[in-house]
Image 1 (cartoon, rainbow, N blue to C red):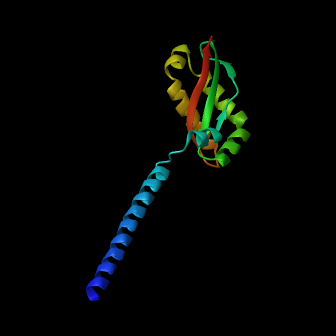
Image 2 (spheres, rainbow, N blue to C red):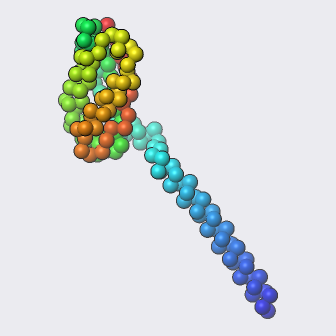
Image 3 (tube, helix red, strand yellow):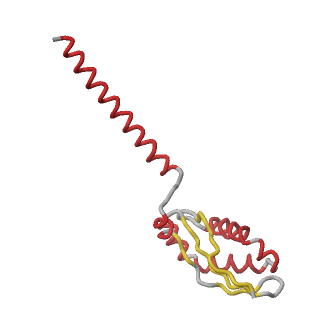
Length: 139
């Protein structure tokens, strides 16, 4: 009787161990994707703002028409950004006014980063995570 009881206990312990290992692997994999901040494209679009087209002049007198998609980290941050649309447009216009044609053609990444940093200085509900230029025309 004892060997049978021992065998049954070993099977139960083995089963519990295997289930524990599987559960641990699942928890680690799920927490890694959440911890890395991976969001679906739908979540990104739902927490982003497409700006109106902005037409302004550069430092050397050339004109640009430009449009951005600004991504926030939450819907609360998006709502705040929508309320701050006039400040956002002001930041963009001021930054473009300091650029000449050459800087505009080669420095869009710098412009996007500067807009992001300046918007984050204003934000109180979350933050801007990315700024993408989605349309641009230099005249």
